[in-house]
Each structure stands twice: as C-alpha cells, then as structure tokens.
Image 1: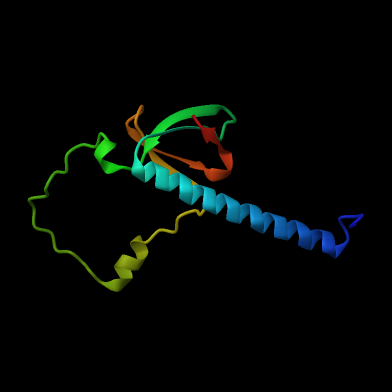
Image 2 (image 1 turned 90 degrees about the vertical axis):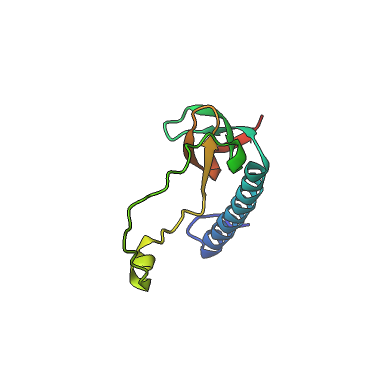
Length: 119
C-alpha cells in the first residue's frame, strides 16, 4: 500500500502502531503490578546489559523482609510549605516496573518492554 518511508502516510501509520504498542505495554504493566501486589511472582526479563534475569518478586509488604521502622526521638521542625512539597514530587517513568526481589532482599527496576514471561 505505502511503498516508501518518505510517504507521509507511512510515518502516520508507524506512529499509530507505536502508540498502540505503548498502550499495550501500559496495560501489561498494570496487570503485572496487580499480580505483584497480590503476592510473590516468578518472572523473567532482559537486563540492560542484555542478560536474562529470573526474578522472584512482590509488592506485598507482608512478604518483604524490611528492617523494622525506627522512631525518630528528636524534635524537628517540619516545613510544610507547598513549594518544598512540590520539589519532593518525582515523576515516574511510565514504562518502568519496580519490585521487591525476595531472593536479593532489595528493590529492583526494569523496563516493561524487557519483560519476557511468567515462570
């Protein structure tokens, strides 16, 4: 139908396919994070260096081996100004998945596009 990449219709079609792919990745990420919140999940993904990683992860706090919370006994004056709170807000990369690795006892992240499969 579109014979060359110079044809503007080719580019529009490609952009549309990229948007569909991003929407599918977002839906897949949400489903994956839902499973992580429900319990332990075994899965595989490709690391940045190209190696495959098998992970056993969760986002369920009851399963995490976190150190106990220590109460701060010192009295500090807390600045609750709106400007300071805005500075602390961080934007999260939409394609990034963070999870608690049950084998390594620490948090890890990877891009959903590198997700391979559940085990």
